[in-house]
Image (cartoon, rainbow, N blue to C red):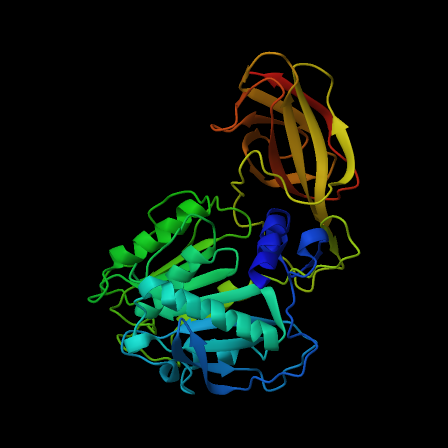
Length: 447
């Protein structure tokens, strides 16, 4: 049930992701996503407690350590973070008071439920998918007893634990919002590994156990899946004792890819300026927490029939959305679009605008380009004029010229050919008020 609900959330993620990526705003949605944000455990007196517990999974007795905030309230929806141990490590190692949950638990400010599963033979071979089944079973158990925000599930781990986090990203992209992989490799499978997940990879440039080429390969899976612009990020030189963090450009809004290469060996806790690996001084905990906590809750309400943003930001946005969505040109966000449609003049090629979403200081729109003629349209160019104070910050499924005033948008490489009666959609996010719809809508065939 919860997986189905989160997949409904995934359908509105195109409209919501720009909000989640750029500021702490509350988003509302209705219809199928009405129960996506909270779990059956909300409002219940919990039976689960902090400590080591066991669960039956795939016919085996599996153990895990659960950490519930001491001030837990069943009326508040919490993040849920899975933290996987390394080869020959244990759940006890991950939950250790010296560096609990890779240092994230002290940073969470009682906002997060943590779980550290124990791998069979102290590893994550994921034979016949048994470790992914354990993740599913634990998710179901925890969500059924505790109040969890289903749009706020995360996973991280180092070495073999990083491999397991990568497997989770590949196999459960509609369940987990983001993962962090420290010095990982593809050791626990990646199936199907074709959908986007926010991804943060960290790896040492002279890792003697799992060469950095492994980490680059995992990273590049989600560079592709998330529609990011391919690049070769700068990495530190050996002997520099530094790290370099790169945020990829061009990614789908809400699906960033971040890569941190450090001058070091196989460790989860490198320290800049030192060859030591001290958990109290490492930068990895803070960087991972910052990456995870940028994603805000999507809080649905059944009283709304279409996505709309309510309230004002609880924190100032930190800039423009992370890249541009690469949504299939025939897919549009669920729910009825808000605002009145604005159409261009009749003809073989028409352009029709809808406002999809809005929030204080910005909005999201989409334009449907339709071939109303009897022949095939080989290439199209749409035109629109934005009102004063409006500026496009990201655009997908098209190539725009200009970001303010009069703008032209040409088809992308994959959606320029439209048969008779066919249509495609390009979308954009913009700063400024959404009260004035674009004017002078038009469309012509050809580039």
